[in-house]
Length: 132
Image 1 (cartoon, rainbow, N blue to C red):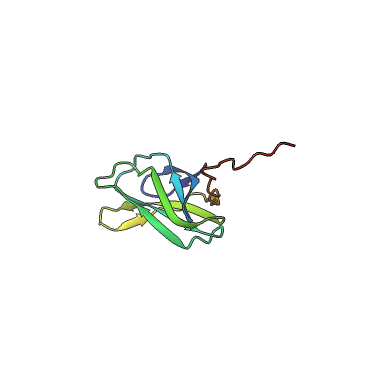
Image 2: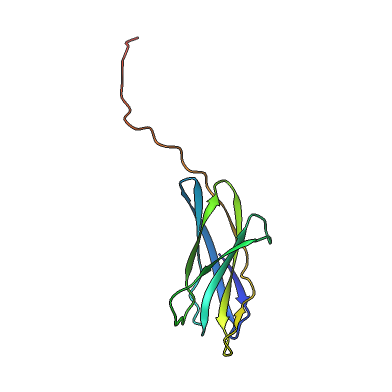
């Protein structure tokens, strides 16, 4: 796991980790981070892509208000098996005037999505046995 000090109204330590699971023809990455009590958190955004520093898509992790701590897990699905993905996360905090402020990004983590295991042979039978 990697750590980063992120800048929002109160300094916070965000630890981001990634693991992968194969789901049929596409994969899913599960990400987690340490809970951090920070006021007015409305979301965590997970950015991802196939090149380091080139994250081009994002998912938003939210929980019903009021949030007093960050959500601690998120997932990204529809990832191609055999492809390496890079991820980072940010915290979104609501300001007193109602505007939203996004933190600096966490350190980047990566995972190569595993290929699915081939199907197991079922109903194996001996059809003949010949002595030598």
